[in-house]
Amino acid sequence: MQEIKSVDIISWAKIHALFGIVSGLIYGVIAALFSSAIGMARGMPGLGALGLLSIVVFPIMFAIIAFLMGAIMALLYNFFADKVGGIQINLVQK
Image (cartoon, rainbow, N blue to C red; front, top):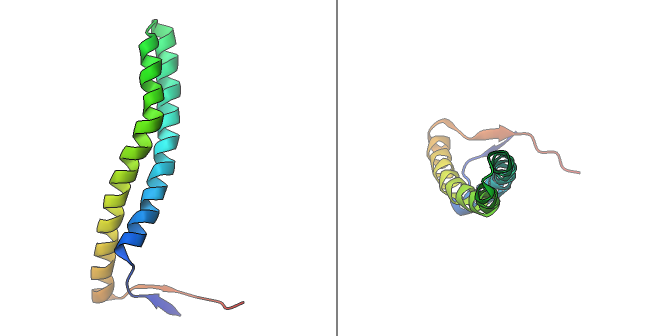
């Protein structure tokens, strides 16, 4: 059994930010589809353009928030792993 005693805060935050970009892109596409559909149904074409903007804005917002949360989580992991022990994993060499 191997144990993860600490993680690099910046590298964990960058990976977490990439997950945020993917999540933001998914939510941005969903928001664009809904706002376009609602805009067409209500006769407000500007709502569709606002929805398309969410495809750009959501990934940026999600990436920033995920980066900050990833850094906080890595910092907390390092603190708690020091006190109670880290995650134990089984590694197999091929």
